[in-house]
Image (cartoon, rainbow, N blue to C red; front, side, top):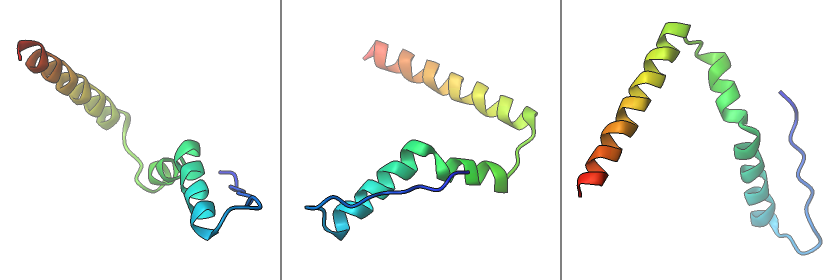
Length: 67
């Protein structure tokens, strides 16, 4: 993991700097990396989740196509 540095501009207040920081955290996927480290999943669990996600997308696409 790398550290995130956010520099405040001359017209930025504290809220703007916090928003920049939050956006940077989302873009760098820091929270996701942390969860991956803390809650290790076996490959079989990852595979099941991927398949379940694919099934959800297919079902949703079919439902929206019929509307």
